[in-house]
Amino acid sequence: MPRASHPHAMQPRNPGSTRTAPPQMSPKFPMQGRYRAYTLFDWTGLIYLLLGFLALRVVWALGTGQEAWNVVMDQFQSPVYIGFHVLSLISVIFVGVRFFSFFPKAQPPRIGPVKPPPQPVILAGLYAAWIGVTLVMTLILTGVLF
Amino acid sequence: MKHLLLKLEPIIWLLFGQGILLGTLLLTGWVLVVGVLAPLGITPLLSFSDAHELAATLIGRVVLAALIALPLWKGAHHLRHVFIDLGGADRDATVAPLLYLIALAGSVAGVLAVIRL
Image (cartoon, each protein chain N blue to C red):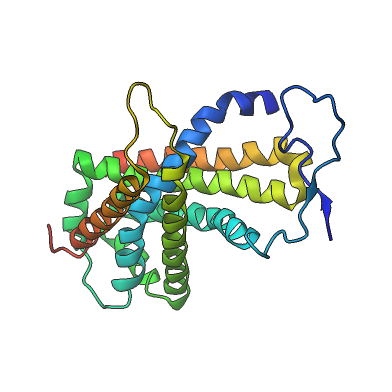
């Protein structure tokens, strides 16, 4: 069912001369059509928030000592944590693919005197950086590079 | 409060944007190894001493601080918008500061965590 959306959404700075109907939330919201990806993208915020705190826990344990580190690593072997991290990995990849797809389109025509590179070049650069950082991070964390 | 949020919007957006960009770049390998592959025994994980030595370098501290703090801001800002989209716009002046305070507290704790390494 359609319902009233955020009353200030898309509100113009100056009221127009013509009265317009109040904005209505689409009946497709939240999980139909293009709203599905939009809603899921927003909900990845919860995953990122939890991942930030989990990373904090790992680093805090690293600063505390071997025993605290072992406790965290043991806990990470539980099916609950593994399941959450699999879901997190899917979420992070989803965020990356979605964000990188619209990042080139969101560039202004000029940044000061400089014209941004063509969209395919920006997209290729983002993916190269993503794959490169992931590869380096993986090699470091598994002890191959260190 | 709404006025303050609007004034802080550029900073929040900067942290949010970097949370998506840098957070995603850093989290993919982190979650893959620390959260999935190593716990399943598919790959080894750095030993405590190696991990500590690496993390205690300047670059290690900066990367870990970013890995902790930036996803928190991405998460807080997106959750704020989930709340607004689900009809909570009237309570945004309460919910938004709460979410940003959580992100701020986590970020401060993250900086402390890398300082004490």
